[in-house]
Image (cartoon, rainbow, N blue to C red; front, side, top):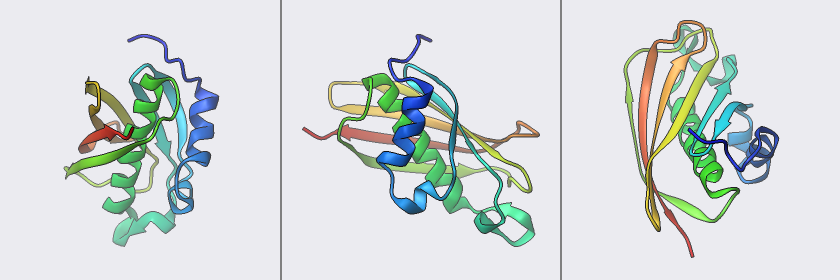
Length: 140
């Protein structure tokens, strides 16, 4: 994969600039970024958990969507207006008492439509916990 025109610092700044405050409360950080792909870390926080110390699905899906947005920005060289058309998630196993890693990649980028996926794993066990796909459209 090629190097992104969007630096890690610029991608991190986007997390604070373009997302709603409640998304910023996830405290996501950019671990790695390349053109059309990004890996974000969601630190474990008891406020995001349901019974048993498991990170709730809503937080994981929000993180997955956010990762796909940053992956798109990396391919576009920065933020351009676009919106989510479709977002799907499949949960396979819980993430409990550890950070979540969200690795998003662009599967196909057309003139106006962009198709992405995100794999969600536990930071410690690296087992696939959820898989999300998203379709986005550029707003002109």
